[in-house]
Image (cartoon, rainbow, N blue to C red):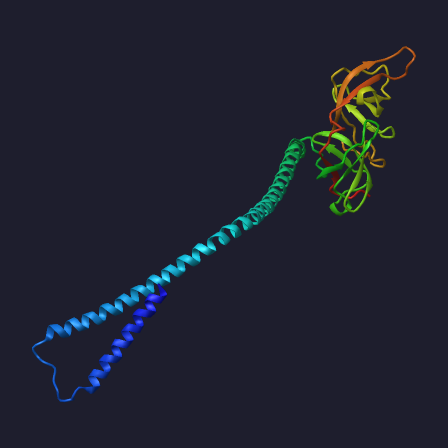
Length: 312
């Protein structure tokens, strides 16, 4: 095909040279015959046809060359695609795996935060009943008017049935004082035995060394609340057998009777209810068993009672 194109181009070149020589030899004054316009148009058309044939042949040659090149390169393209495909697949797998790990990590962190928030919400909800009891007691008529309440959370509860102290998250910086009474709602818990700037230690009623002056408003009987009885109960001691204490009576703190010897606890804080009353023939005092109102083993929030005026 290329040879044909070259041959045709050579022939056209020779014909052009011959015509140029003829035109050069012709006299300049000789005019072309006016009566042969068709011959001139035919000659021009013939020359244009020859140029079109040459261009078409060249274009056809280019397409043939391109087609031949594509045919030759096609196997190499297929082979390159097959070789590269596993690497593309491996890259897509690794990229997808990295994205999945990143998303999994983000979801785990989100779940952790949600669980922590749920736990915090549950913990706050568990404190609501205790806080309500404290608020109710503080607003009730039985709240000792000479005191103010410092509400606080229990950060270290009693460590077991034989532990008789706990730690609260308020200390001297909040106004907590040594020997201050501690209540849960309208129930006596114990008193402060150690004070730090931001925390305090509270000794419970169940401590063997604890003593609370108690009073039975129903029978006007007084006694001392002492050590722990069976099942976490308290014992009301120093009640003469001739006095009367009934099962179900409510015992409260007796308060101060002598200004020279003020009591740690103001009057009227509920301590517990009488479970049983007994006596033996040889005993001097009644055996009075008392169930404390405060659940000393599961306290979440308490209030420290601090005098509004400093004691002298």
